[in-house]
Amino acid sequence: MTGLRIIVCAKQVPDPEAPASAVDVDPEKRRVTVKGLMPVINPLDEVALEAALQIKEKYGGKVTVLSVGERLSENVLRKVLAAGADELILVQDEGLDDLDPYSTALLLFKAIEKLGTFDLILTGRESADWGSGQVGLMLAELLGIPAINWVKRIEVVNGAIRAAKVVHGGYDLVEAPLPALLTVTNEFGELRYVSIMALKRARDKPVDAWTLSDVDVDPSTLRKMEVAELFKPRFERMCTIITGKTPEEVGERLAVKLVEELHSLRGR
Amino acid sequence: MVLTMSGGVLSVMEINEEDNSLDNTSFELLEAGGVLSKEAGTTISAAIIGRKASHHADNVARYVDRVYVVEHEALASFNPYLHLHALEKVLKLEGPSYILMGHTYKGVDIAARLAARLKAPLTTDCIGLELDPQTRLLKRRRQVYGGAVIATFIYQGEPQLVTLRPKVWRGRAEPRQVMGDIIQVDLDINSSASKLRVIERVKEEAVRLDDADVIVSGGRGLGGPDGFKELEKLRSALAKGFKKVEIGSSRPPVDKGWISSSRQVGLTGEKVSPMIYIAVGISGATQHIVGMEKSKLVVAINSDKGAPIFTMADIGAVGDYRQILPSFIKKLEELL
Ligand SMILES: Cc1cc2nc3c(=O)[nH]c(=O)nc-3n(C[C@H](O)[C@H](O)[C@H](O)COP(=O)(O)OP(=O)(O)OC[C@H]3O[C@@H](n4cnc5c(N)ncnc54)[C@H](O)[C@@H]3O)c2cc1C
Image 1 (cartoon, each protein chain N blue to C red):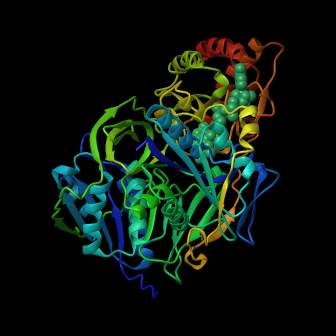
Image 2 (image 1 turned 30 degrees about the vertical axis):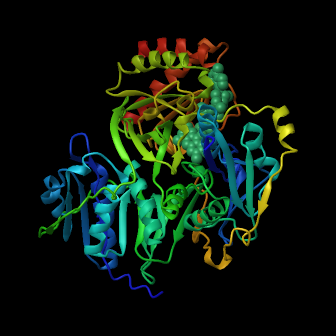
């Protein structure tokens, strides 16, 4: 074997850094609508990709990124190739948006079966849109392989995975034989910088596009999320902006105002 | 498939491995489970899984009809496969229609695997739970899109499986007149039971932000780890006037290693509700807001007057924090 065969599952999501005002709900259709937002790769899946690239650099191997969805943007997802992934596979078809977590896992499972052998699967801890944080662990159950959740550090020791799994107030050092699946958490660190030049070069790299029939999935076996109700919470407060001729003055007045507010708060 | 939904509610207790204490999440699950079982007109049971689980049996039995105690040396550390194995034994005996777990590193780890095995619909991190009287299905409320939207899900399927966000329920479970039955469950653990090995637990800085009176939080705008030294000065100035003042953080400083992850406030971090929350160099992304919006008084210091944090603050100062903090700290020391 020459190095590790690594698969990263990456989801395309509306940019989570967009202001909350860009996100709206259609209560009748029970759908979230997102205005004028470029999709991005789910940030935590980018973290998983970074983990994969670091493992590849250290131990050798090949990194395949797998994404499923209804309307995937090749331009957006090609970033993974620019960052250093060797292969990008899209499973794209009608009705693949807003699947429930189990169906998403099932679809990934079928695609991975078609891909053949692998040593390691990495996913982000959760997605930025629906964020249920279940798909990785479910996928591992379907594959019948060990999974370690919320991983922030990874090593390969004697053909096994050794990972730091985030727990409250620290981490558990956990070992699992390969093949294994890890869900990676933000503490691992962000995806490396991807230059415009690298993005340009990635434009010519081939991308594999599959459909449901390619991965042998009957659409009727897939279930959507069952949303009964949607609304937008309001968080706004009235903000008093402290002014002053100099920053020093602003700082002082801020202190005065804070103590004032505090008194009225305690008085209540 | 015909759903009967005739089983009861099962709340899965959480034990802190370090000191074998019953985590407060457990009482929250007993509270939510108690309400649900009343609405559904069913029984409530609890599962306690751990090396010294029986220690808590009597206590938990005050709140439920049945307590299942699964005790085993191998449960001393948290191994999701062994805990799941133990829980599956309880499920065989009890056959619940509703399963409630905490949305903690343990609860999530077990629940998603269990959902896959049972093909049961799971909703994680719920902030609201109701019973639909007609269908007897759960209405599961949770934040989506980073907290910008709140969604209610209803899924067919049995058992109904949820993890509940800690501290949304207050942990005020109602004791019953009669103590519930205590049922000891034997666990056989052979070598195939676990797909992984827990080598050791490594403790890092463990802070509690949820009971702080004041939280001084820094974001990417601090520009580097040294920014937190400035915040520390502000923290100690405030510590003269308040019992517990803690440093908090948005996510980028955690990702960059400027500060430990136990201080992260937000969707994937702590949900806090101090008297005063001071956000320095934090833009106010929804994923951060949902962690601090319950603060009584919010102060924001940010160089960008258009930063969304100002729509979420009561008092704001626009400018470079390096220039504002010194006089702010000095004046506070005078006034507090
Ligand atoms: C699934 C998911 C979960 C997430 N969970 C969390 C979470 O739990 N907690 C969390 O915080 N985030 C979370 N995020 C990230 C979140 O979307 C934002 O990226 C993050 O909150 C931004 O952090 P920030 O405000 O520190 O940085 P930025 O958005 O970069 O803001 C920095 C701010 O600092 C200001 N600034 C710069 N220099 C100065 C200066 N000298 N003086 C004063 N102000 C200055 C800037 O004007 C800017 O407003 C999550 C994201 C996703 C996708």
